[in-house]
Length: 154
Image (cartoon, rainbow, N blue to C red; front, side, top):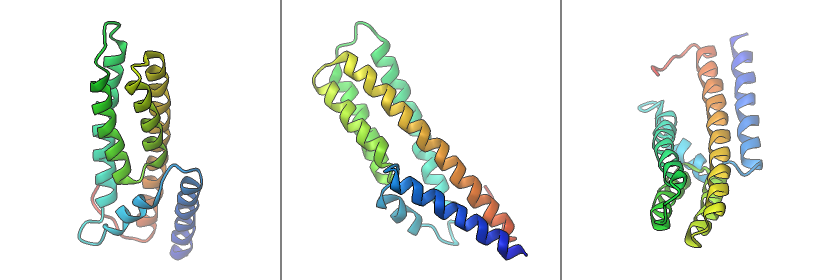
């Protein structure tokens, strides 16, 4: 009976991942990240993704603060923050976040404040969607581990 629960949870994980790939939320880099996880580092993906979320929160907060300043004119600073976000999103396979950051960066290169504000909204939306989906994925994986009778410290 224990195996059936594990199999069902694994199927749920596979369906969620397939959906995220189909939607373009994730790309093959996420699979490569998963391949780096093993018994010696069972929380590797979880840890890397959480570092990404922590750092991304800071970058998004900085972007919002910059754009809320009516006197702001240093669009290169926005570009620097976006370059960091593009790079870290690429490294974990967050395709849609990366893509909307690239579009946002185009607006910043044109010093287009309304375009930047809209770009920030879109980036934040995609970021939060990714974060929610990763939270759901990690919950399913934790349930699968518990159902299998093995528990790794979190």
